[in-house]
Image (cartoon, rainbow, N blue to C red; front, side, top):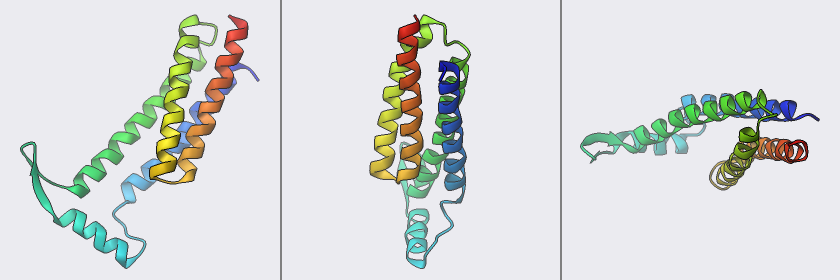
Amino acid sequence: MNNKILLRIAAGLMVLHTIGHTIGALTWDQPPTPATGLVIKGMQAAHFTFMGRYTTIASFYEGYGIIMIFVLLLISLVLWLLSGETGNALTARLLMPLAVFLLLLAVAEFIYFFPLPAGLSFLACIAVLLARISMRKQL
């Protein structure tokens, strides 16, 4: 399989990851069970001052979720843009750190969240690694 296709597959996997994460990030406060609803209400009710801002844990949780949407979109965009430059030595040098980042993301997602996002990040990592190995042979 050619490098461009591998990197576009990785970008597509990360777009799917972004879509799933966006749905989760925008609906996290809709509790699936009454017990979960109590936890969410507690997160929203307990206010405290942090770095000059009066806030809640729910605000931090929601903010981190929204920030991750942008991070995942950036990863998708970078992979897509790199797929158009597969004959470039700079692209080849960027792929290994990107693959390591995707692997670390997958591990963190598996430990702290659940297997589906971890699997998408891991598969994107594999696609990037395969593209890098293929590029090494070509350059």
